[in-house]
Structures are given as C-alpha cells and as structure tokens.
Length: 205
Image (cartoon, rainbow, N blue to C red; front, side, top):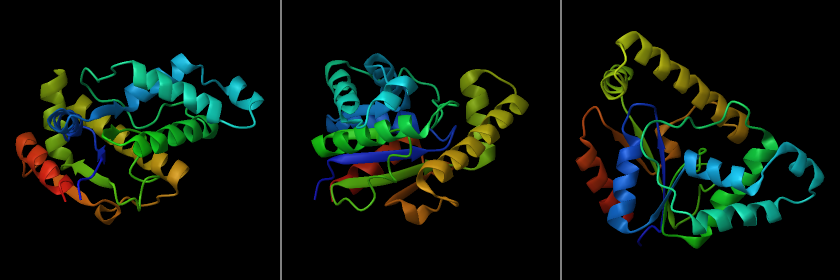
C-alpha cells in the first residue's frame, strides 16, 4: 500500500531535510517542516492570549490549515530546531492538531515537531528516522555552515539535548529508539541519494 504520509524525523547534521525535500518532490507531495508550520501559526495569530480565550483550538487549527493550503512553504535549507524555545503546551496542541489534519488530507511529507509520534499506528503513515554519528554530523555541519569543529559540535550536542527534552515533554518519550520508527537510515553509511531511494521504495509498500 502506498503510504500517503511520510513523517521524517532527523538529528541535526544528518541530512534529513534535504532527503525529505527530495522525497516530497519525487512523489509530488507537499512538504511541511517546523519553519512552515511556525510561519503559518504566526500568520494565523496563534498566541497565548488567544489560546487562553478559546475553549477549543479548532478555529485556530482551521486558520493554520488554510494558510498552509494557500502558501507554498518550502524550507530554503538549514536546520530548524524541533521546538521553539518558548513553545507552550497550548501551542503544541494546535500544531499537533494541524499535523493530524495534514495527515488526514494525505500526500504530505512532514518534517516537524515530532510528527511521527502523534501519527503512530496509522497504516497510511510511514515514520522515518534519519540520523548519523555525532562525528559525521559535526563534520557536515562545519562544512555546511563554515564554522569550526568546536562550534559545530556544540550546536549538535545542544540540538540533541533540545530534541530529547521536546520528545519527553510533549510525547512522554524518555528514550528515543529505532523501534519507534518504521525505517531508520544511517547517513554515515548511505548517501542522500541512496536514502531517498530507500524511503521511496519503502513508501510504495
């Protein structure tokens, strides 16, 4: 069965964003990441005060969906952290509902906000983790951003900590495991092109 939704989780420097964008292009699916969801939420006016006034988030969710549907939002590259520093439970609830509705619509690659976890168990969703060793990720980040190895290592380690905190806070995931995904890709051993082909083959069922 063709998977109509691909959720791709990634660690910083593993190349997940480039892989996801290529998969979306090859499949003709829409691409959604932390940046596009955050931009849409900002445009929709997802604020703490509004969430406090509203008993239900659905009207806010509908606005975010409308903005995503009408605006081509493809990341221009670079790493977007899996969580904003000021992310709140109410904001996260809106984004999770948006992710669920994007999954219902189908034909989407979602690289955002731990989407693999709220969509677990759906037969039309394939959950992919793209990762690599710290050394490989540091080397790639240093080359990509033109920073020294010490700065790249600090960024990777900080991102890994933030990712772990996010998954535990919002999805009660204390230890991320490959078994929480349908497919785990190690880009120490595989090129981006190989990874894209593997995801495409696996998504075809």
